[in-house]
Amino acid sequence: MDFDDVINKRYSVRGYLDKEVEDEKLEYVLKAATIAPTGVNNQPFKVFVIDTKKNKKQLSEIYGAKWFVEAPYVLCVVANVDEAWTRPWDGKNIADIDATIVMDHIILAATNVGLGTCYIAAFQADKASEFLNLNDNEVPVLFTPLGYENAEPRDTPRKEIDEFVEYI
Image (tube, rainbow, N blue to C red):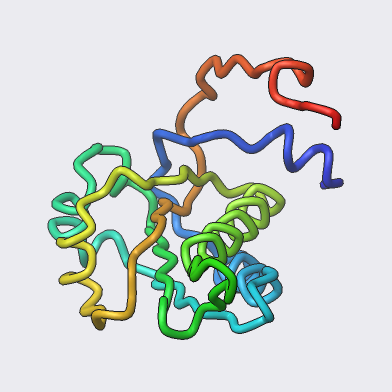
């Protein structure tokens, strides 16, 4: 699939088949995380690959949508705030930005190999941190199911370019 196909085909999948993901596809998706750019290449993140069937109850407490636990895996990108670059002039730590870029690479790679995903930021962070046994310096940033689609895309109107771009 070429880049235009990937970015145009990707959508927030809210329904998954009960079908295993091949190991080589999972590895391809995880490899995409390793090449994601991060501030000064610190790579301050972890990716948790969570077996949905073994952890359905805990995952359902983290995010309650039924479709969230239909895919064989749920992935979580966790940022390590102590390892992330911080802008020296204003103290902005970019751990959450790095983790978001990592998840974007994961999601686009998944689309490229025919897998569905959905960005999940509206989760119970405390329950996620407890389930993942995170340290105080680690923050869960995003989750996504990872599996084969069993839902049609929703109508998601997009703004026109002139509605969000300003030339200076």
